[in-house]
Length: 284
Image (cartoon, rainbow, N blue to C red; front, side):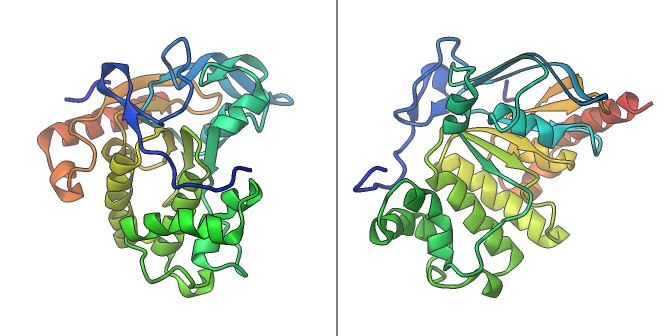
């Protein structure tokens, strides 16, 4: 039961063990609190519309935290606040020990719901765009991205344009782009929401394996309770807007376990039912 513009550019550094046996990004400054992300008393409003109300959350180094809740409850807004793209109305957010929004943005890689691949670039150039933005040459950026194409089952598609890729492959490229940004904290906003059910299940298993080999601290927003439990160490259930944490549920098995084996496990089924019950109670 789990408890909770540099040149030359190299491939993202391997992870190393952080205290307590979890994994954090190598070279990333460990915050004094020991948390990758620390949220205390967070509240946010858009004018008179209160979106988040007094939310507390702690993300440990190397942990994957799932966030589920009703549509419109502020899940995507939460990621924007953590990344420093928005300033909170109240409360504090620290990423890698810093509350400064510029520091938070420098520590976070944000993967939105849509892949947003640039249609005029090849797959490998899309994946490596963050490296180019930091001053790497095209050759250096491609050299850094190439090993990940092999590792994540994309070898042979490096020169393919996005329009020629399936939805699942586009999402893989988008995730590699997020990894190659080299940030210790990944913010994933419903990365598979636009995929059909079969492709979505395949991508969930692929992402579980990818996160096992490229460990980062991750906040994963999803409207799918099963997906969140399968991919995460812990899942926080949010109430309807204004969002509050209703409950926290520990996942029932190690990540990167085969999906069918995981979701049919009685402990997993029980955890899923607890999460669904919490969501139902919160909306009454």
